[in-house]
Image (cartoon, rainbow, N blue to C red):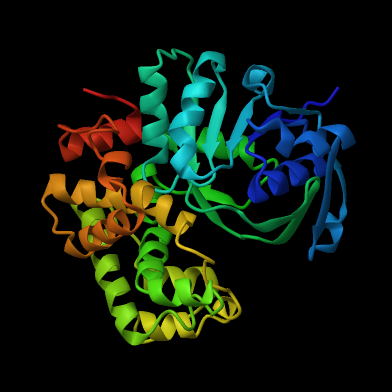
Length: 368
């Protein structure tokens, strides 16, 4: 009988299938859940996923223990619950998980974007879930992957280091100890405010999409998103957004990485400014733009990344005029109110907390 940690992967999109396949290949008892059965029917019929990768040792059929669209089944034996869905669906999944969670289970959001773990915990409280569950989040997704068919997954690469934090942070070491059996790449990310404020996608994705709206709609994304889309003027806007993000982090007592520091850390790309650093990143060459504006770079990254950062800024006295402008443009183009839909401090259940009270919550799990 296997003594390895039992994993459940929630979400059978590109990332979820890659993670489930890789876990199965590594010998971990793995369950794959997707709310729409049709998306997993072929995987259930085959009993696993065909994995291909430029990592030669990852080319194999990867068996799964269970494939289901029933949440109660998916969580019944799970020890580590990996949430691999757009962050805009985190609250809904938390609500659906709440009746079935048990003491000792660990939930990991891949990634949390900004304040994902805080939102997940708030929903569980609202749903009356009393199970002693550890919610944690990764700063970014560990795989670069895609799905080539209904029961196929392709992994292009696996990141070498991904920060992760638990809520509360005094449980992070416990989470890392368990997850390192499968993923030694995860490192201590401090606390969930730190991982959330280091969300570089909040800076790069929405603004770069909105400032190239005409090009996206006229070419259907047939241009290089970062290389052609980031001109010196666009980069100036990204730098303004980045300064606001770092300043909001500072107001919370955090040292957030700048976009320039992140590019050097992740890709060893350097430059005198953000424009030069992006142009000097070889991995960005060939990446096409979104084919249209109904894309997660807007409907996910605005409400789940920009809104919470700007909401912190508003409450704790930091000007976020550039972020407010990007959020407003997204609201106009999508004809929706992303402030109402997004992760504001009111919706996160942390309005009224002082900085010290907020840090006590994310570090020790104590709410006043």
